Image 1 (cartoon, rainbow, N blue to C red):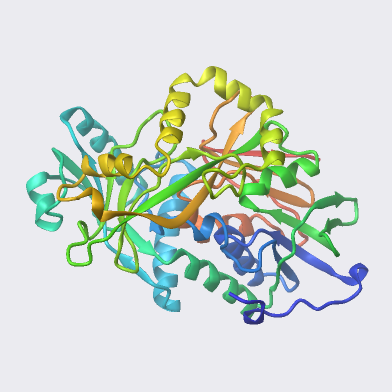
Image 2: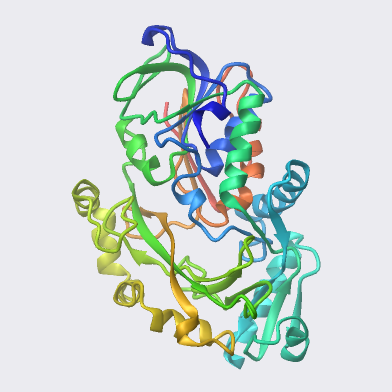
Length: 433
């Protein structure tokens, strides 16, 4: 999306560029926040370092809108996922964003995995996910004849969306509400005083009464410049995909997942229909050597040095031996057609190795690690009187975006301070005075 689609950023003397609220990060979370804040406040700026919104994580995922049966009941993640799924469905219908409710299957490939399906169903029922059920393979194959296994969980509200179009639509809506969208503006330094926060880009300064940092891959780094979140560091994981080249028989019509591995916070290699009608296999979760290391051989020295110097990385290496084994296996099989074929063939029959082609789509997941070496699965928010730092909106982040934006906005008072919002036992919030 070009700058011309948005309300233009007026080029005036830097000392005159002052906003009530600035949102840093033009991913789906930042755009949803800008849209929500634009309804309430008259002078909001959305800043994105790239020349288009949704350029990184938000535009490089598989476009899945989750139903909400994975999060633990009673958590904020569960609440926002279910509410967000419904909100995205309504938005896509209203704004004609490409969207299709295809349903989700979680397949147990042997009897030992069946109890996990029942656990997921209980979670889904408690979270208010409609229509969720456990099916025999006979019932599954009436809809998905190629699926293999002994039983499956089915959730009819699982859906796919064009994630780039969704993010762009949210930015367009924000612009229509009067939000200024500034593309190509990378924040490199932040200063906070009693009167305002000053944001420095490479060429200009912007001042604001209140700032929201939701810069995804760089959220921890910006928080560190303000002396916050020192106990956390982002470790990037690269997600690769293969696409199935079979127009006459696309293998599946919905989404097919394996039973989740309790050792890692990733859902495993799965098969997903896309809006374009193709079928994706992936993503994996390969440790990446840079926050934007989309190429498997890419290395960013600054990012690597930053990670190596953080004690959380060393504690993760020392304490999580099972996780290290999983990570090494992922690294070893990066871009391996045979590996993806083997993983997919556990879930579906009828695939041939030559059906798979490495997809150009590559994403980076910003996985937060704390000082003890634990991979953080919870929502982490740190705040000062003039700022909010959203440090860990992992999957189902896109699904939750609209509900999460409302949750944050509802906590911002008209005098521009953020009140402690009711959360859940999964949300970590720290206020720094």
